[in-house]
Image (cartoon, rainbow, N blue to C red; front, side, top):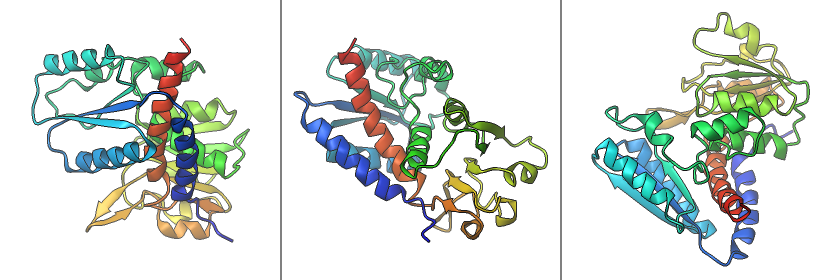
Length: 277
């Protein structure tokens, strides 16, 4: 029995469906990615987004600044907010420490916030209102749905409480009637929680944080972690845990591909929402 949750396969299926929808549009949609500084990982992520955007049929504009004053960056974002030709805006994280991340993210118009990270979009998510959902959590939910994993009443444990992944996922799963526990760096006896999880989602960024003895037999494991060690990628869950689990996402090839396609879906969603206003 194949226990792998194949993110690449699901991404390719979603991509094909998305391209069919985009072909029917009378106008070309434009995604803008704003990046500041010289973070090496960010450059890789920007190029992945650009490649996918062009493949599905969007325009892609990368506004890169080696250094920029905060007020100048705010002005630029406001200009893009008011530009009818711009469909979606991403602010690439991390930003250099001299910039106020929250102020900059929350300058992005809620209607163009295709990363789903503005306070307004996160508030809508908590209130079960229509919102643009952060891309990695959205990708996780798509994988669970694609593999027909029932969430109602299931004990789900999330390890990691970041605003990018853990917190949005907590509310998305709660909205699907799951029983959700959120663990973090101050949680005592982590194993006592993970061992009882029907579905375990780990998004910490620590290689092999979860070992096979911490996993409930027959559970579903979603590994969001990406850790580069000696030029090789590892997840947060020890790979041998697949022997205990019923299903598991690999690293790479699990959640990662879903993050980028979820962003592309959000661009189309943002366009449709504005058209229907």
